[in-house]
Image 1 (tube, rainbow, N blue to C red):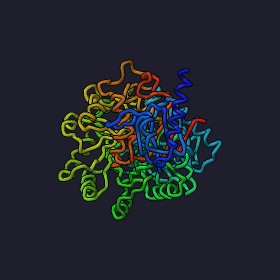
Image 2 (cartoon, rainbow, N blue to C red):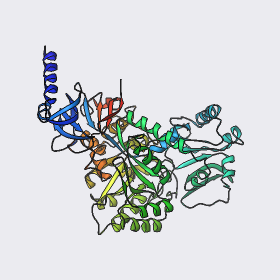
Image 3 (cartoon, rainbow, N blue to C red):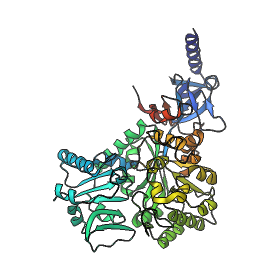
Image 4 (cartoon, one colour):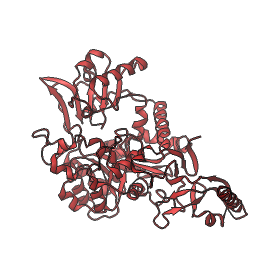
Length: 544
């Protein structure tokens, strides 16, 4: 009887919404809504018109004013704002679908097997791929190219480490790129062993090989973008911050969005290539409802896993090795001053404590007479106590919680017992800056924002390790985590007035979840499924 009564009441409310009142497009009711709006944290219903929320509250409240042409009974399911990945490689994820996938390989032999199987199917003229990580192997050392040379004596092979900061290539690729024992490139390493090239390139030298990669056609770029969109929508992601794109790809994105062939919203960071910087500084900020081009992505240093991150003191597991800056300090400061005089944001990859020191001090110096510029530190992975002391809310920390749970198995070996206390220190960063933008850095990590959520609140990996969580004092609350994946991420893009919460006059981007992410048992968070994803009130993904 109770169910029948509730159903009858719902029908009456829907009928009342259809009385001649202000016209609207869609009513969503009978929902468990987390609005991420502090003025009204919870709601049961909302109304949408012309791709925006126009009323949020109880069914009775919103039904008094609006006549709706369509309605959705959410059947008590949880709804959250459209999720935002504040740091990812959206286009790269799409491109990766056409390459050899090495993620999760447990040995070098498994890497080789996957490459061989890939080539049997694809017969590529130049084999590329990504995802290997020697830290996941029994022998935690960089591989060398001898086996790769024997398997592929003529076909060039270049496969990128999971973090994108090391490249394994065979001799055919080295020859094409004209890399020899005498080749010198600042800002990285070309590894040698016993007077021979090993086939491992770290950071800047990778560009010599990447420059000879076959370039994708426009059709292949479009396919990559659509493949990535499909994956992202299935996880409830409605906005993505792509950390490093060319003007060419950005133009393709804009063109697809204008003809409604790419519906996902994008904050596109322009890669720090001199010609790209010149082009966009002359062109100016470009902003539509779907695309935001107002920032540059800069690399200060490399990655911790490949020992390219720059540390103030040597690596604990490699004597006298500090890592290497990818961009020179003088060049970085010059660029910062140039961007400070423009409306563009500067978003800089910084992993090691030395790199973070350079970035933070340079930012504060360049912005000393300016406020609300929201320059972003991407990753802020290892921060020394003296840099924590200077942080405030004039900078935005853009961090990826799954990095902590992926790296925790070996990070202490790189950093040592004391230094690791300032690593992956998200709560400390939040306390100093007031907001955190959360992302995944996929395809370095998995796309799932629910893995991000779990790593942030539980500080555990998918095996529920370790008991009690990794450096649990730096865990975030569920409320903080949801804000970091919605409103705070929007804030980091200067978009908090148009998205990030279920509030009147914001874009109607929302996600219906199969479970209550704010209440479900902690260890069940990674398994949460998306029931439906909406962008501007339009359903773009759903379980039929």
